[in-house]
Image (tube, rainbow, N blue to C red; front, side, top):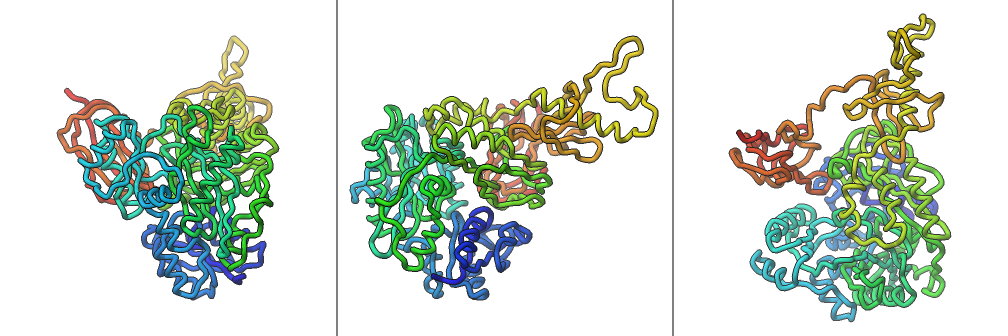
Length: 628
């Protein structure tokens, strides 16, 4: 076994790998960009090396700097985590050429599975069932449009080199194809440096089923059962679980056998995930599950597999990379209970899931469940990287119990002022279709209006806010004569005092009856602002109307950048007439494209940015006026 390991990554996956390394007595080395100079993963490591500016393409994606850091610290092995360079065959070869241990699959396997079209062709030849579609070399827009027409709508456009839900678009009809193709190609080029795409039949009741596989250098390949990752938003996983609900023994045997066959076809070594799409219109059937792709790395959702098998997958990675055989044979790998994982993101569901940045002034995660967090209280969320900040995982004897325990845990999340999707996660976990196991990958999209809506505080939360303001007032006037001029409650000369108080939430007045004691967690900011945490939400109350936000949402016709980022597309010019909801510009931030739309029917008065421009938060990008 090697004595030291460098993790070529950041955030929760770096911390996760360090935890296993510490337990095994392996020295740890972190790398960090300028934006991560005070990051939590640095504090976890034995040593840390700076590798460049904040932008990932100038730091975490520069393989030469990472290898130099390994040499400088004497690290003997490199673990790539996921994302960044984890599926980069050239980097894997460079690590080996430098005399270091690469904790990952062989470069040949990475290349074989790295391009979705070639991987599907290889799987067909290996006897693995694949989804019908177009995998051709002709990437011209007319040919792709013709193939989409042949396949039939809805059709799915996918980046050949894609992953993580990026470079993927569902197209409902022929009229939408060209715009969706252009957007998909832009995102693919920005994320992967490759704008080629493939087309697939879009399964109308799709379930996303994946199988964890492991191989070693001695010819052994096993599976560690399946996961269900069907609860997705814009093709990005939100909640994952193991095992898949409704999976019969026959269907499980079919999908796990296909996964092992796929791994053997590329002489796979290490941890990998074979992803399948299942047509769930008639339940999970072995003959209605097709290969989609293989991720040649550890997955974000690997903890649910660890919980139901009782195994440490990172330890397995270390042992396999060191040349050891797999620790267990297939017959020794048991499946126990049920595990569910929720991804906590720094984003605002009420504003179309725009990422949220800033310092975590308040950051409390629950006990009683497994928590893999990339940050701690006081850390900063920057616009440079993926907005996932933690994963919460519950394990219980039954699926129903695991879901309930996870929902209770997510309710206890307390984050401020950075916004999170915690409340959205609670609503997903409590959705009847999810609880019944009747979900598919379109569930969130169909229920978005309800699941992502702005939450309202309960009477208990209002009472807690009223209590907090009353306490502040009483502290301020302690020792002074009680007068109605300093009271929050209503005052009358000829009637009993009104027990309610008027507060302001999101700029609107709300009435609260102060409780005798707080029934919700509360955070007091200065003497004018109170934050009450409830069901994963952070409700911010004031005792007076707050000033309007200078970087508004566009209701006045001013379209401003909601966060720092790069303008990747300008779709309008001054003088254009636009309709409400029409895309005006596209901003790339936190590895995702965000379309900025017209807030009303109007005329474009001015455009303040060009494609390719880097803009800061609040920058005026366009200005609209209503037509005369």
